[in-house]
Image (tube, rainbow, N blue to C red; front, top):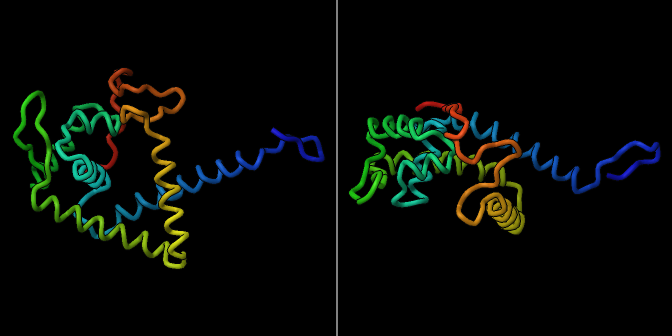
Length: 178
């Protein structure tokens, strides 16, 4: 820390910028959740997250979802049960414990619809940006996101958190139910 002319502690520019990034990410998250709740889409925010993970990780299993989202397997099971009942997700054939998950045609349509709605929000936000600014922002976000993942696909854990959601014996909040 640096000291200003009055002898008070002043944050260095990097800390100030990092705090600004955190604040901006919190605002983006809040707005994103609000937009997802009010958007005319058939998927809740939770369902969007699960469906997007299945799209991005073909052959994923429920245990992979639990690990990725740091949820108890019972929570993931309930969420997947809802998505199966809605006809959006199904178990594919596979061997071993747990079945690979895949989207149904209806699930793919719901996912594509949701992505189009949310992409329109992002496009509107970037309307005044140059192509170079958008490209730089995309690269910086990808780099930032890559820095938050470990080599084994795990995430950097916040101080005081448990890497195993079952370790505390408590179930984390379930979030938004579909």
